[in-house]
Amino acid sequence: MAQQPVGMTFDPARFTDAIRTHGHNGAMGIRYVNHGDDWVELALDYDDRLIGNADTGVLASGPIFALMDMATSMAIWRRTNIFRPQATLDMRVDYLRPAVPGRTVFGRGECYRVTRRIAFVRGQAHDGDPADPVAHVAGTFMFTDE
Amino acid sequence: MTIQLPPYADFLRLTLVGEGDDLRVAMPAGDHVLGRPGFLHGGAITGLMEIAGMVALHRALGEDRPKVKPVNVTIDFMRGGRLVETFAQGSVTRIGNRIANVAIEAWQDDPERPIAAARMIMSLNRS
Image (cartoon, rainbow over all chains, first blue to last red; front, side, top):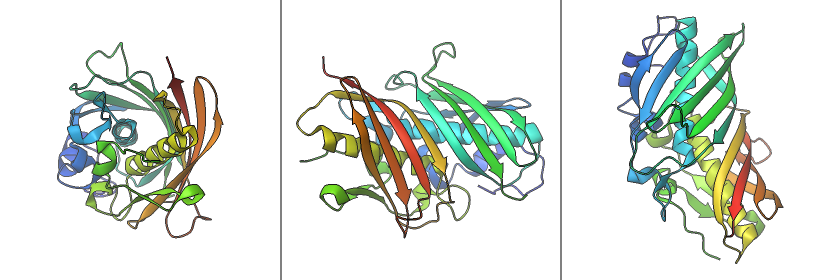
């Protein structure tokens, strides 16, 4: 994901655009929505190829995990305002309810604490109403350039 | 026993390999699972492991076919996943009336050196 030179000020819109053409995020069509000082919101449009249950048409949980991994990861670069290599140490995802088939899923990741080596993140995903989320995540990342 | 994999498994190009207790899910390397340059995306690894967890659960349930929904997944990434074929295998820790607990490991060349370990809680609905 190093489409941006290490050490450069982090622009999530540009970064998401740069990775749309290839890789796992590109294959799923994950796109930029919005950001703040310590959060990034991305979107995953409904796609038949990402269905996890052919009977119901509900999206698989994996794509929602990937969306939240990406949103929380980018939130760290926003909070530190610098692009540094990092790796996910762990992530827990609670699947609160199935996303409604056909709807875009929005994932907002937040970085709420950064230490010298570790970043702590959390986030929620919803399919139209932020007050009625489909998933909640909590995780940690490690900076790999330490 | 036949296991019908969902469209998302085709998206990841997953296949089932091995039989019996050796049954595992394989994911080929490719641009579709690439994260940062040279490494697998954590989301693709998790997707593979969640499917492996589902496969292990359906295998353990046998003819019993409740509706299964994932409640949550917790995953530890232990090593960066290189761009090579990756395997995952689940083992069912407990099947109750309403809840199943499943543990999953993912590895590349050596099963003794897992790249990730996950736990899933799944809800079972027989009504």
